[in-house]
Amino acid sequence: MAEWQDIGTARKDGSLVDLWMIYGERVPDAKWDPKRGWVEWTIDDFDRMDWCRISGEPTHWMDVPAPPAVAKE
Image (cartoon, rainbow, N blue to C red; front, side, top):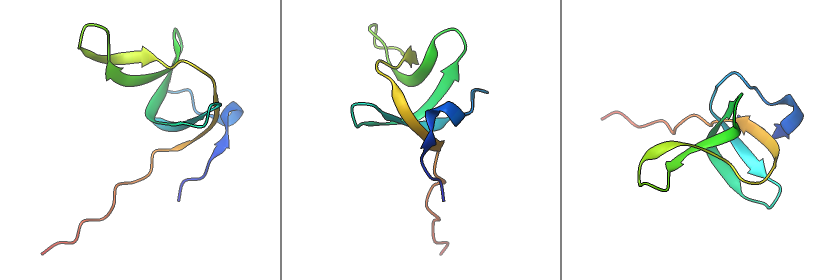
């Protein structure tokens, strides 16, 4: 099971992680971009999906949890 860890220990290799922000919000599926900092997959100002810089500062991170198991019939 994934646990929250201090942001200072976050992976910055392009792996997807979940972030916990200083204002108390969870940002799922974020990643570190060396040029822009923390980014998330979102709709930009032109209604296109793109990686956009996250405003605010994350305090913690954790691995993206695995999806639930689906029962086979």
